[in-house]
Amino acid sequence: MDKIRKDEFYISKGRIMTSVDCDVLVCGGGIAGCAAALQAAREGCKTILVEKTVFPGGLATSGLIYIYLPLCDGYGKQILFGIAEELLHASIKYGPGQVPEGWNADSSPKRFTERYMTKFSPASFILSLDEKLEEAGVDIWYDTLLCSAETEDGKIRAAEVENKSGRIRIRAKCFIDATGDSDLARRAGAECMSGTNILSQWSLEYDGAAPADWHNLAGPIARVVYNEPVEDPEEFRGISGKQVSSFLKQTRRMLLQRYRKMQNDGSHDRNTLFPLLLPVQADFRTTFFIRGKTVLTPEQYHCRFEDSVGLINDWTKPAEPVELPYSSLLPEKLRGLLAAGRCISVQGEAVERVRVIPVAAMTGQTAGFAASIAVKKQILPDEVPIGLLQEKLRSAGYLLHR
Image 1 (spheres, rainbow, N blue to C red):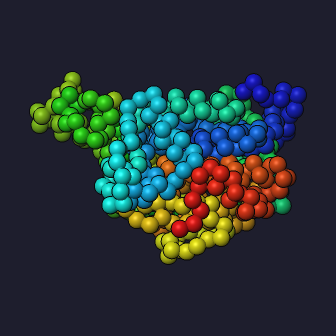
Image 2: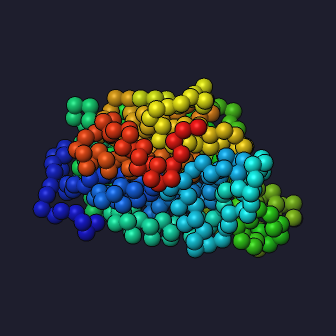
């Protein structure tokens, strides 16, 4: 917080708070937020990254979802490039994991574990992300909660955050919502949509008798994943404080039942099988996402978008890629803001395509490029010349059209 300008203050609701300025404010330090902040800072923008936890990486690290899903189409062709590829290799720089050999040897359909992907240690990835953000000159504010947003004439002007220093107002020339939940967009009055979830929790355990399969991180350290449908989809949507708490309590209860059962039937005891680490944030697949100028749906998978900013693959099976329009990163009405990660404008099965680590990195980098153009040209994100943005993306290796 040493970069705060101590001589400048702002009065809100009768309270005096510090006010700071930057070029780009990125809210949310998950994979999308890290990618956005990295690109904006590398383009020379004064960039602040606000993250409510004490770790970068979001669900990939704090959520213990330690599988970097494929960058390829399943037929040996790479689809995602740029920071998405950079972070895949960063995830295993200080820990276990490797890319399968022969993922691009031929055009035959590949099994899931044969594709351009890897597993990684969440803690190792945290260290790599910290290193990259610091090298890029990103001003990182950990343990900082987004509280509210200011708008004027349909444009976002500032955001208020709070941490140990108190309430702080951040003014920026461009804003990026990478919260995963459209927190900044919603607080600024943007129209948002919501989805449904299943009960899901990823955790790490010690299992002295664990088989050496692909799900093991290292030796007897293995992952435990619970994915269960819910009877009432409305109960665990994650769109209220009560629903978030209920989701966390229920998923931890499922894990507790696992250890109770194994201890009661005598198959294991507390010294040979026990939990090592639980996620520090809820493993929601989706909560809120913006209603953008374009809402990408499965019916548009074969469309050509003139404002395409890259291709997104199908991580579940070998398949043709889909073009992602820039207009799906732009709120329909609110100006001055870009979305990145799982809160971009999608519906239906398209949510499954964009909620994963590689696409989060791809949309984050795209938002970072667009924000830097907007700052330098003194325009709004929806005024960014698409040709110029596409030129920058191509220079980063992006494929733009099917």
